[in-house]
Image (cartoon, rainbow, N blue to C red; front, side, top):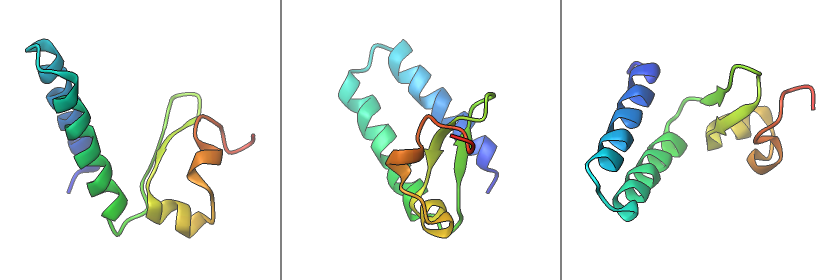
Length: 79
């Protein structure tokens, strides 16, 4: 599975839902489904922005790195 393709598809789905005037609950449900899939993935997955700040870390990544996801969100590895 190509992870970048998955994130691109999620963005397209979210954009289409907003563009088509779908309600916020449909978008929220879609995001919750993706979160559940990512958290249950057997691979350690994380996303950082261009400045190196943590945007997302799944449960397996937090377990492998022994980190609390809530404490690293929005921070670089040096903070």
